[in-house]
Amino acid sequence: QVQLVESGGGLVQAGGSLRLSCAASGRTFSNYAMGWFRQAPGKEREFVAAISRNGGSTYYTNSVRGRFTISRDNAENTVYLQMDSLKPEDTAVYYCAAKDSAFSYQPSRYTYWGQGTQVTVSS
Image (cartoon, rainbow, N blue to C red; front, side, top):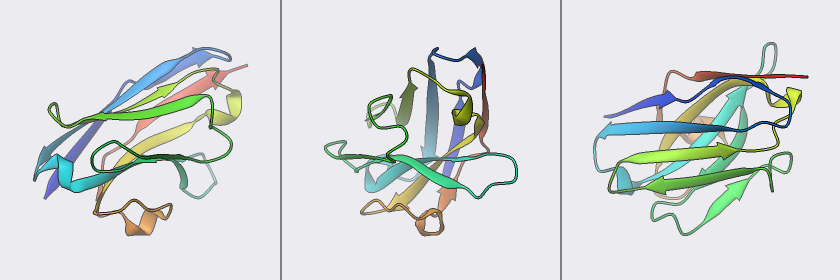
């Protein structure tokens, strides 16, 4: 089992920044690719960003590329999502998730999920 706990969400004005953290415990963190997903009211959960097990590769959905940065610290068992130039359309509950071996864009491929953290961007 892997337990994931997100933090860092909140209310921010458009153009502002937030940094989300996801702390992992349980099995060896470096064995898992990590992803960030988000879900807005009335919408399906969507892929935001992912990072490979050693942090050497990162992946982003087009709408956040250049504004968001995913990173991880395997010594601290934590994955981060730095969100800059935030827009109202980024408003959602953000979830981190863990997956064995290679990353995936599909939420259904991830085994472990955090409880989510709310991000609200006001215009």
